[in-house]
Length: 93
Image (cartoon, rainbow, N blue to C red):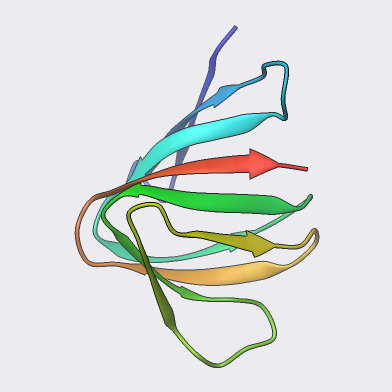
């Protein structure tokens, strides 16, 4: 069964899935600035577009584009700037 999620007044939407690998979500983010918290380790890959990310315990913003990935450990938060609609894959664990 697929589960849909919606955050930030519908500006971030995802579909959750579980397969033989790890649980994951596939989603899109609209233009905006967001802060996400993690409950478990997350590996986020940009599918199309760009995420400008400030990872936990850093002050530097870094750009991630098509095919780029970053990891956020459990129980952390990270900030995102999205300048154009962007698709992503987030794998948990």
